[in-house]
Length: 88
Image (cartoon, rainbow, N blue to C red; front, side, top):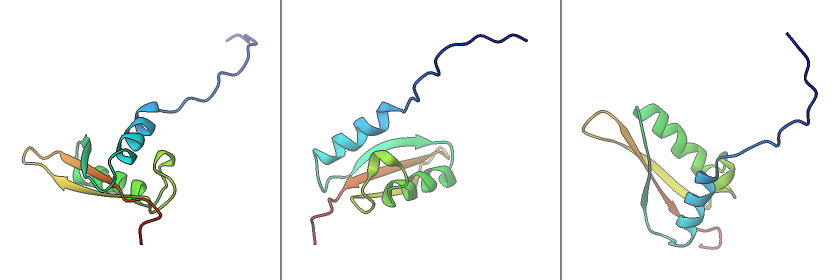
């Protein structure tokens, strides 16, 4: 074991989620396929995190809608839509 003193690296975040959210904002009220995951549970969880703004790229809460659909091969697809916060 050894000690090597160096500055702590800056925290990183996935730019891909922020790019996806921006693309959705540029096409309000249009659904888009945004992710394919290994099972419906994971896809449903991601859709929930998008809808509620728990995923920071998709804030504020309620600005996006998202849903998960099971594919024929057993994977699950996540679809999302920017619905804005100004629409009543």
